[in-house]
Image 1 (cartoon, rainbow over the protein chains, first blue to last red):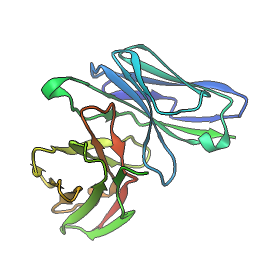
Image 2 (spheres, chains in turn green, yellow):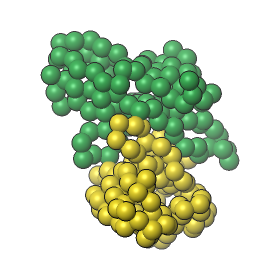
Image 3 (cartoon, rainbow over the protein chains, first blue to last red):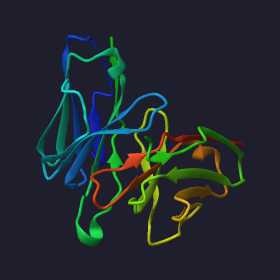
Length: 117
Length: 112
């Protein structure tokens, strides 16, 4: 497989459930991201990992818990979610550099459509 | 407060004509700008970018223009094709930042 792969594509869960979203990148990138896309809102950055260390936690509630075991894998653990957490969750990766190479595009997966009932 | 704004939620264009999508930003520290395209049930796909040291970048049918004094950028697609129908997101970042900041997107519909 190539690119950024997210599983599952769709997830329906109750408010008391615990589930995990998985992301895997095959691009050799060193940074991974979780974004949330709600209806009629911009993509919202949730978490950033660079070289497997979390470098940003964008005021996300603790019911969302990220995990980055290595530079190719990223998880988002979900527990006791609310219906308003229903959204499209997008994973992305990039080659985050320094100096003249600091900017590079993010490559996105196809997302997990989450519905909380 | 939104740092990246796409004030037109939708745009309709005829095939063969030019599509112009606009984006405004408020953070003067932004120095790298990107456009992404998104089809339903897929993730955003990188389209074209521009660094703040340039005012124009062209890639085939796609050209991005940057006006730093106005904090405005635009994406021109010419000629427009029905396959260009998608949601287009403007995004920006700066060297001290950690990730892209996105606008809400503009839905482009190209009719044949």
